[in-house]
Length: 102
Image (cartoon, rainbow, N blue to C red; front, side, top):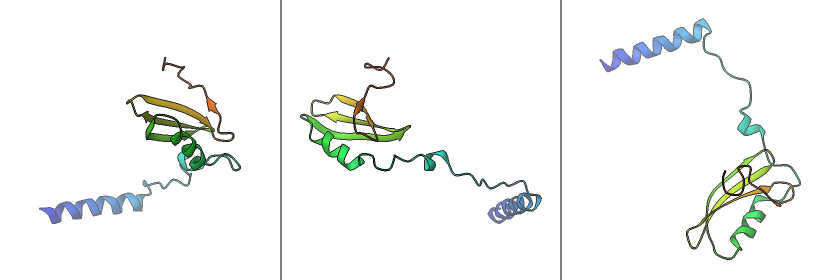
C-alpha cells in the first residue's frame, strides 16, 4: 500500500513537471529585499543602549520594516515595552498604533 502511494505521488509530480504546470518563481521574496540602510546605526548598538536602561530585563522580539526596528522588551517589573527605532539615526519614533495601542 505504501509503495503504491509513493508511486502515485511520483507519477503526479512527473506529470506536473512534464506538462509545465509547476512554475518556479524568479522573484526574490520581499522579506529578503528590504534591508536596513547602509551607514545606519547598527542593531547591536541599539540593543546595547536598550539593555543599559534602568529596569531592563529581557528582549521579547525584534522586527524590521520600512526603515525602522520594532523592539519589544520586558522590564524587571514585568511591564512590556514597545519601541520603534529609526534604523538610520537610532532615534525613538512614536508607535504607529498610538501611545496606548489605540
